Length: 131
Image 1 (cartoon, rainbow, N blue to C red):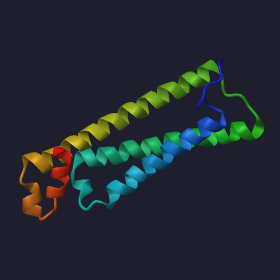
Image 2 (cartoon, rainbow, N blue to C red; image 1 turned 90 degrees about the vertical axis):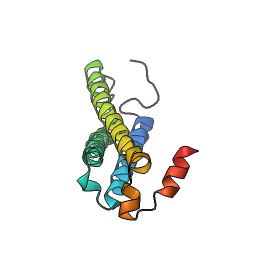
Image 3 (cartoon, one colour; image 1 turned 30 degrees about the vertical axis):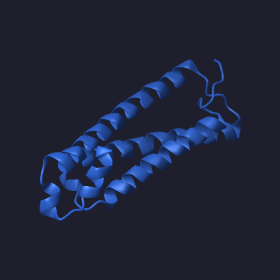
Image 4 (cartoon, rainbow, N blue to C red; image 1 turned 120 degrees about the horizontal axis):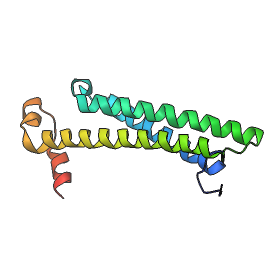
């Protein structure tokens, strides 16, 4: 197989996987820091989706480290197909979770009086969204 940037078992692939893990962990940390996030299904779904992303990406990063350490080629077509399917599943789940969370956020800031009743400063958020 042709060596491409970010392919399994390469240093660029390791860097990309670690970046995926860090950004997914950052997303989890940001969501958990919000007060009352667990009472909304969309936000819980985002946490679960990002948790799966962290596990998947960190697991593949560990595999990349192992392959680099023993100088093993991971360019097996079956193995690469497994990576592609796993990445496709986690990407689809992450996109769905991000879209549902964004939809709930827009609903709260524009279509309900939730912010006024809960004394949450949503005006700054809605001003940014309208620009």
